[in-house]
Amino acid sequence: MRCPFCSHPDTQVKDSRPAEDGASIRRRRFCPGCSARFTTFERVQLRELTVVKRNNRRAPFDRDKLARSVALACQKRNIDPDRIDQMISGIVRRLESSGDSDVTSDSIGELVMDALKGLDPVAYVRYASVYKDFREVDDFRDFIKGEKLAPKGTEAVKTKK
Image (spheres, rainbow, N blue to C red):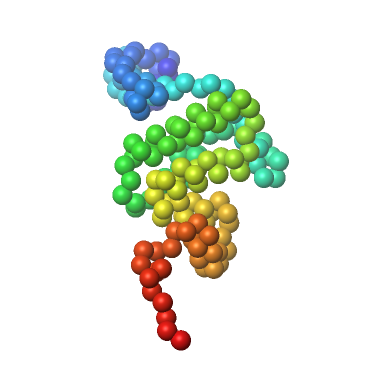
């Protein structure tokens, strides 16, 4: 592995241990060129995935891009980062074990929405607003009503005529 600091071509592994409930390996590395220490993570990749976008364009699957979009939806929510990472790892495992190396962006979006719905309702609505391309406040209202995510206490409030 090349050193990210000095680009020395060969670094030494000083320590290895499982991370993320065994889904990856955390390695502490040392560079003999500049004496820097850094951490790498090694994950099992079952197959190369290609994302087929809505416009039929194809792009390699990028776990980091998926993680960034989920992190944006979960921003400023009290959600344990380990739970988010486990959720992302589960989605990636499901995609890789699906048997097809081509996955649609819609199928990825649906998997993320299903996972976020169980994790945090606000993050779920935030993600849905981008994924489903909400344009107006009514889009949020209709989505929340359709998903039965109405704010607590609103069912009991009735106006008299």
